[in-house]
Length: 307
Image (cartoon, rainbow, N blue to C red; front, side, top):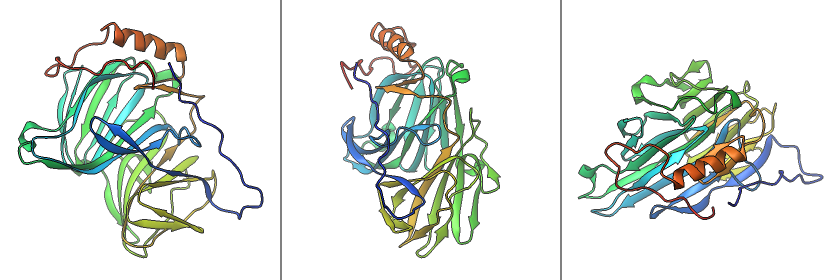
């Protein structure tokens, strides 16, 4: 196995004082026939709070007859979060869940001791082709909850706090922030917010969370002397008081939370505080020891030789 390990962030002597600790640009990665922007983990930052994986999906347009086909694959010791801005995905998992994921809803899947799921474009959208734009995040679970029972919860768009603050539209996807709380149940202190800023708009990331970052989905913002276009994440120093300025209309995701209770290892689709636990999960997947996904039993993603 090849383990994804990261170096410590670099510091530049004599650099101007800034609220920004690290800058991460999304790197292109091929996933099931199309390209995503991989942000976390990166060479300079493994996690922001409990968020250990961050993929920006699209925007992509599938040709007629095509679509997303992420075959059944396993996870352990993490939770996945899917949030769409455009398109639709059918989620199926080994618990028997089948859920259409549409823009604005939050879909939180707790892998815990182990779960298998697939993600596919609905059959009804394939003849004409369809678009897809969104995020997939992984949240590392605290050690006390890594082996919890697997669960899946769908939260429709109209159940999430959505409000205006100083001309900025804010939607609280998970956690508690800006005086509002999402109905999504989490295992550690965290927050995840979608913010839409008009040209010239300003937003201060929440101060009550230890680790914080902002990622630009559309448009561009500035913070201190740094310009952040689409596809860039700004990770802020603990205790800093940054202010984000929209250079034109911008859409962002802000996220973070408390630092994790120790390091986490990531290999393929597995995250854990224990390398041995990941090795056991890999062996179990290779041997067919995980449960099947009802309604999607014929295909699966094989265990890779290396990552």
